Image (cartoon, rainbow, N blue to C red; front, side):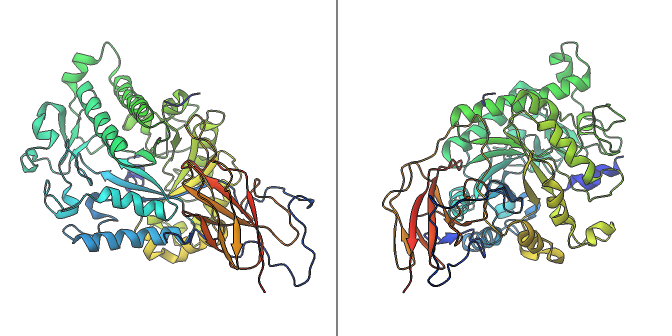
Length: 519
């Protein structure tokens, strides 16, 4: 424990390579003029006023959804090689734009995209729930992300049990069939009852199992807790409320159930591996001012009141390391203005030690139902606005397949205007980790930089200083040219380079200096 849906957002308002450099930053630094005198880092009088265009640390992530084959695999029943190729293509599209994190859905509906003894194989792999796909995808998914400098967050849906109300269609090993008393039918789907301690314990065990057995960097929940309102349907948890309500109001009890699960998972994750992050991407509106004077000046669905998700409570109690509110609306949208919601969320995390990243609606770009989304620069403008609020430390985009389609060229515009340099991951207070030792034995033969591996290093940052010799590498990423997995780098030109070692959380060592000269 720390010291100290994506697609539902629009609908809810209606309720109202290895060894090579990756993440290469184009154009970083300058080549020294022939015969020019070059100052060294120790003698340069550096003007290192932070440049907001090149943040030193910034999360740049993408959600890769497996449910309903939204992003990966593109359809059920593909062969192993095809599944691998599709996934690698998504990662390469992220890496070339200097992204540094992926959030991959590993548990869509009490099923598994990995080998599990507690839940059956997902039908989104093979087309048949419970059918062995012939391999365990998760080690490959994690390793390929790490090879490209992408942090891997395992994304779980905690309460969704089935997309089909007919539980008999599920495999016999499915927990909804083994424990029918845990479930509630709501509309055409089946959910686990958040009010049952047995459900919370099961979800926690599933998450802990993955953290123990796989080299994941984070555990992630999306915005689905109690189900989104659906017509006149009633979520029948009356028996559990009678047994466990203890005199509370139903709404308060439901929020407590969610808060208890969040705290329980947070503790389990950090007790298992203290460096693994745990965070949630809540619906973008906590409460409206009409519900609560401290809410946002919006008029959409209230997550607190409708799905019993109290993000403010998680932030205040420190039971999450980060939040990614899904702000899937453009600037000027009357019911939920992006310009209004970003400062509201920034205020919520201020001084708490909880990181704030913004969920961006890449999937909405090009939609014709709102003129704002026909503007190629809308998403880029969101990131420009974010710069005004220091609490905003990154963005995550829904969803992965738009990395390939690049609607209206919007993603390339984001990359050009905001991601022209790589960025290190933000450091989250209270997590385990420390900077590795400075890389030893750094040298160059021609333009090939090499150094000795640093114990505890996951990767290395390479900076190229400008011809003035000014060393601003601790201030921002203006001179950061690459983050590499292995202790080698092919320098694009002559000059002074700095190499630092990074642990898995991106704590950074002191730099080793290497001079690259060409004949």
